[in-house]
Amino acid sequence: MYPPEIRARARRLYLAGATVAEAARAVGVSYPTVRHWCKIQPEPRQQGTALRCFRCRPEVDNLTDPAAYAYLLGLYLGDGHLVMSARVPVLRISCSNTWPGLIDACDQAMRAVLATKVQRVQQQGCVNVQSYGNHWPCLLPQHGPGMKHKRPIVLADWQRGIVAAHPGDLLRGLFHSDGCRFSNRVRVRGKEYVYPRYMFTNKSTDIMGLCQSSLDLLGIAWRMNRGNSLSVARREAVAALDRHVGPKS
Ligand SMILES: [Zn+2]
Image (cartoon, rainbow, N blue to C red; front, top):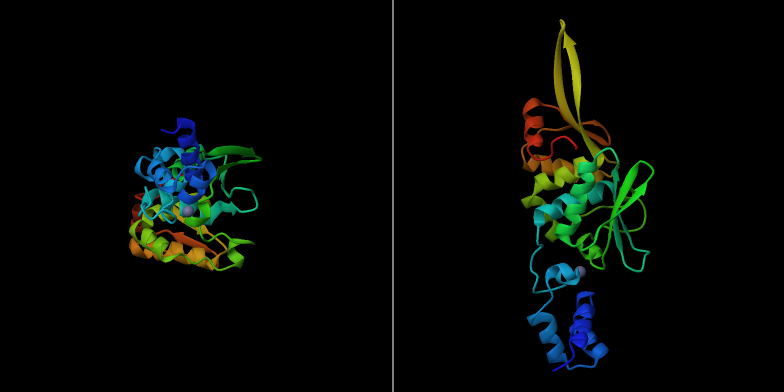
């Protein structure tokens, strides 16, 4: 029998991203024993991100929550950055102070997808919701130097599958970050009419294309107002998008 602290240390290394062989070498215990500790009796999922990354662990064949992933991908494409210069990569999404409900939703989506800890860093007028994780780059392979609209944003095949299955969740993320729902008020012969509509603005033609194709998948009519601004204004189209996005809160 090995002391429990040796076993715990091997598991911690494994959960932090080390291979079984590396963990075994580090604690000086045989490979089969460490493999048993790490794989047969793993820690609960919440204790590490490595076990949850389905891109790295063959035994995890799917995301735990693909709908939350599609939402988070939309937020990331809108207002997110993956900072690769830190020792551990950090996913950072700026959320306006105006919408506390969105800050909570962003936090929850990060936890549902990968994060064990989420931080909220107050900035002028916004909150950076952020999470450190070695496996964010596996799940958000669109990271790269420079602004998103100055480089191609192409989804991986596995991401395309998730977006096709959850287009409404991607749209909620996109509209929550770079979109809005507002009401046009029109007065005709003393009577006021209110026309709600949605706008989505993004300088990246690739991200705009994702918004358009997801709307198409749901049969929601849209049109471009300007080169980088999309509008959903027809009554039945707004009603359909309300079922997936709704007003910000
Ligand atoms: Zn990974």
